[in-house]
Image (cartoon, helix red, strand yellow):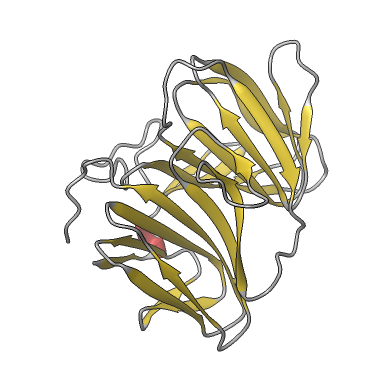
Length: 239
């Protein structure tokens, strides 16, 4: 089963500081039946204005993967030194028993980033965070694992039975992805035009995939996307 969710279905939350496309129920936005996709709890596509950001807020028992597309975001956690994330940087925040932090854009331009929330493999751990630079332009025609609890080479380790990939395809190139049983996948097209098993996708569209041993992603135009592989966590997934 592969379900296309059009970009128009995303929930847009607008404030003086940011514009946030919420792909799942999050914060003040709640949509029954759209709370998670297996082990994937949220996926937010955020645009943060200059001199603005997310004020002090709390996470616990969630793995938060931040992928910076453009601009620079600064994070502060208590008395710890601030962390700066630039284009191509990825952070895994294992919130564990709980962490409070502030995220701000101190640059003259806007910041564009994705924040992906995944249920942890184990609860009750001390909070931690790790950052790595993957480059603003991922290698074409391959999937790059940027965060993983499945021992993927080069990926930032995380406390979840999941992997987050970034991909970039040149026109008419294809990638085949194989899934193990009891797992599901999520594809978010960030730029360009793709097909997933022959169905067309435009920028901002999602593919929610379950009960498929394999699927094919092909580029119509030069395309960038994020792919998340998570366990179903006992969720009955049907159309």
